[in-house]
Each structure stands twice: as structure tokens, then as C-alpha cells.
Length: 402
Length: 199
Image (cartoon, rainbow over all chains, first blue to last red; front, side, top):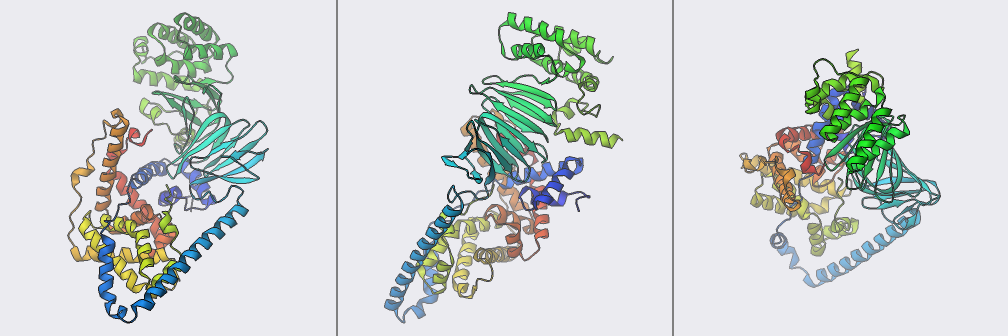
């Protein structure tokens, strides 16, 4: 059934009504099918809207009206023996209350025995598996498995690690000395907060379903695998091993492809993405450009970085163009020009004035040197680039061309 | 997001239902308190927002429930039985009235372009406006698409439970929810604003 389009299963997928095997197949199909993915976005909006439906409050007077109607209907039979009926009702109510209390007690006792964390968990929680040591959820240690509920913190010490199952869409390994919180889990959004430490995520769901809040930026999954770390100051680092991840904060967004990383800083937001195989001098200089406001230091760092730039590093230089001042932009442009000349339709003035169309055209020629998934078709226009959902979009585009 | 049943609803068990079957008025009241808001909500959304009609429908449902509860044998979940009564009452009411007054159409034209510029409290009110717009759009859906949505989002029922209430297959429920979601998204596409959803 999954070799065909899966549009009819979208709501069931979002509501967790498919089996894990069906969910996996659904995700695999939708990642590589533009038509189904487009429908998926539409249905996701419909679900979000439907979730806004409030439960209304019935008027307080309603019970009195119902009771009087019931009274009229049963008046005849009630005449028979009010006293005995009243006594019976009282006894029944006491018995029912006792049974309810007893039932709840038994349920609590049973759950306490079977779940080391007590009677918690439920539909809004994720399964946590201990990998090493004794991770904690709240104040309680996990023996082998536990449930992370919304709002709860999972914490590992120097000797413990854990793995979180993100519904049916992927999993997240929590390394030592890490503290994470489940912020939200619903069909259209799964969100973790990484306060400190390091986590590795592998997500096989359609893009823009899994988010990680950090003190300095939000990581938005675009169908990928990545490692995200946060230090004690709240600064972070993202390294992508597969697909793409968007880092966002303070109206800045960095699209980070596989093989690349991006630093984030509290108060500033995400820096500029760079390939991991760039030189250390390049990376150090980029950090200064991204986060140091001293003009002299920045100017020196820029010259250092440009001297270290390879054709592949135009990923960084292209992202830098709108982020640097006019003087710096001239230097960046000139270096890029020597590494990969722009097409004839792209002018120096256009680039320096940040003409979106020209920047897009140039990027199209730069991408071949980035080596992200070979020469597969990365988006051609600004609109396409902005709407890039995942590396799978690119793979699909490439497949469609063939 | 899955909705958890309120505490009152969680405490409705076989003992309470049995007490109701014996005519215990206190047990009736507990049952009523546990489900009144959900039943009333479905009735409001099904009656085009007419609260007076919704009150009538809610009263009919509970009166019927209390008079027929002796016939409940526990073959199905109590909630399934209850919501079947609700769905039937709503459909009957709709058939009787034929012509319903829709929600104010202006409610669906929320100007969302400036939402991102608003302060948090203003955003809160914008969300309320969205909620109103959704109610309006829900009202415009055909009953066969609207009722599964109400049972899913107001009652928090699973597909299997909805299927049992509606007397159809799980596949039909999935299909109708899909079409309902799709129609909602199309009617309210102007609300697809990331700022609205806190992105």
C-alpha cells in the first residue's frame, strides 16, 4: 500500500494511529514524494486549526432543569417508598465512593510497583531507555526504562547516558552531563529543550516536525541526523551528519548541511555555517567575525579567514554576504570571485547591494563545489531556498530530473 | 495534543454507572458533571453556534441517557454509548431544523498579517480570534466531516472509538478526518502564519 501515494493516511499518521512499521514506511514515502508532502503540510495546518477548538462550558442551571424533568418523569414511582429509597441511595453512594477509593488505591499501588517512577506517563510522554549509569527523570532514577512527560526534565550525570524515543519519528541519544526537558509532543510538533550538555538526534519523519530549543537558538529538523551541544554559558554548537538543519534565533537563520557545523551564542543567535574540514584558522576567524563586535579584530579575522578559504568554503562566504558591513562585503565578494566566478548575469553591484535574485543565481554555481550530496539539485531560486524542507527535497529533485 | 480526561470523568466507573441504573440521583449528577461540557460543546458546534438549541440537545441527551441507562449492558464502552446518543441527537436536531444559522462569517476573516507585531497579551486575543474562526469553519463542514473532528478534538476519542460511535470503519474515520482537516486548512489558509503559532 505504501508504494502508492499516502495522502489518505496523513491524519492517521499525525494522530499516531498507524503501526510503527506503517509510520516508518509512511515517512519514507513522504520524504521522497512532493505531492504527498504538500498534502501533508495542508493536513498538518488543518490539525493545528482543529486543535484550537475549545471545550465550552455548559450553563450551571442545566442540572436543575434536567433534575426537575427527571423528577416529573419519575414522580409516580417515587411515591412508593421515599424513605427506603433514600436510605438505599445513601448506602449505594457510600459503597460506590468506597469502591472508587479502593480502585484508585489499587491502581496507584499497581503502578507504583510496576513503574519505578510511580503512576505517570501516558499519551503525552516519550519512552526513555537507560544506556549507562543512572539517568534521572525529575528526582527519580531510571532503572531500565521510564516515561518522560511534558514539562519533565531528563538529566544525566558524568557516568550516565540515555536514549529517548521521539514517538515513531526517531530517537535522541542523551550524553553525559546533559539536561533536557520535553516541551511539547503533538502530531504537528515535537519539541525538546536542551539546557546543557550534548544530544544526538536521528529523525526519519517529514521535515519541520522536530525542534530543539537551546538557550541561544532553536534547531529545526529538516530530515536529518545531527549532534547539538550547549555549554554552561548557554552557547551551543550544531554538527550535521546527514540532511539539513536550520538554526534560528533573533531573526537570524543558518541552514546547515551535512558535513558542516554552526556555532550559536547567547544573545546573538546562530553564527555562520562552515564545513568541518575547513582549517582551524578559518574556523577561529569565522567565530570572531560572527560574535566579536570590535571592528579592528573583525577586519583582521576577515583577512585571515579569506586567506584560508577554499572553493568549498563559499558556503560560509555566501552566507556571510548579508551579515557583514559594506566594506567587509567587498572583500568577501572579491575572494568569492576568485574561487568561483559568478555567472555573467550576476554583477558586482548587484551582489554588493544584496540583490536576492543575483545572490541566488550565483549560489547555483557555487553549490557544485560544496559537495553536499554531490551535484544534486540544490534549490535554484530564493523562494525555493527559503522553502527548502530537507535534503530529501534535493534528492527528489535530482531523481525527477533523471 | 491528546487531551486527558478531567478528574471527574476519570472517576466515572462501573460502580457509578451501576448506581445510575439503580436510579441514584447523586450518581446521575456525577455523571452529568463529568460529561456535560463535552456534550454541550459538540451540541454547540453541531447547531451552528446556537447555544439555546445546544442546551436543548444536551438536556435531551442526558434525559435519554438517564431513562435508558438501565439498558446499558456494558457490551461497549460507556463513552461510546454516550457519544452515540450525542451524535444521533445532533443529527436529529439538524434534520428537524434543516436551515441553520451559521456563525458570523466575519469571524473567519481574521486579519493575521499583523499578528507577529503584537504583544503577548494581544497575541493571546489573536489566538482567541483564531479559535472563533475555526469554530466558524467547523460549522461550514458537512456533518459527516464535522462530527469525527468534534469527537477527536473535543472528546479525544481514538479512531476505533469514533468508528464505533459513528457506526463505520476505522478507514472511513481516517478518510473523513483527512478531508475535514483538508477543508479546514483550505478555508482558513490565511491563518497559516508562523508568527501565530509561535514559530
